[in-house]
Length: 336
Image (cartoon, rainbow, N blue to C red):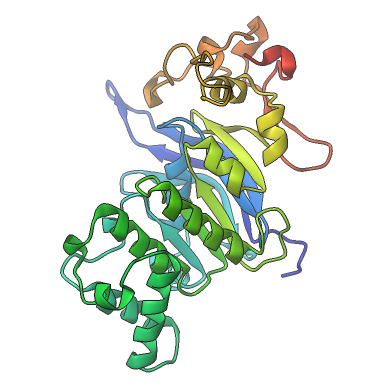
């Protein structure tokens, strides 16, 4: 693979959930044509309201969808290799070594009946030719990197003996252990205080070689509902709504000059101004899977909607190739 090719390339990804309407089987589109690419040393923030498809994107890439949900179309290429349809045995070889995922719930990573040390040591031994003493040392150092106090003692604890925040730090330590080529992080710092969150973000930036400089080894897909975290960490931000990416651009540009009305609405609803500044919430609620309107899914909530928005909006790529927007009426006139 040449250095110019993206490490992760997702094209036209469709994820379906079977459903019935009367006597007919009518699949629901959880993801509807999601496309993006991610190069080595780059960090892409994936943001949007709950239910927009962020986690479904991560689980689709990792091959961890719970049946009957399934990837129904599109391509997921990692280091030039197609992951969609890859046998579970092959996917398992990639997970934890070349691709790591940090879940929002740390108990999806941790085994409740094993000590923290046993779990991390076994992870080290599965991917490195070292003895148990060296594996334990690496486990202790990994916990120290993510701010776990008394890491040597914590190795002998079970998950239930740790607070939720400490369990999450352990899960993050396991994901960072082998400096994988790709990290997919699904709301990993939600339960952490601001100091520890800042420490984790520094570690992630270090792995990526600097959030704004690139050139590092690890690519990061960082899923969050917190735009301030996405702004601190990401090179680019992609905004999801109703199973689609509706806008993507360099982080600073997207947050200072959004062109999709949904992005502008998200920013207007955040407390970014002086204390006491009025917030402007987005009216209405996101559509359900079975209740998405034809055309632009944001149309019923959009103050800039025009009759043409009843048609499916095409993706308009940027001239520099760095993202684009899915909107028939983009620009400052569409901002809230």
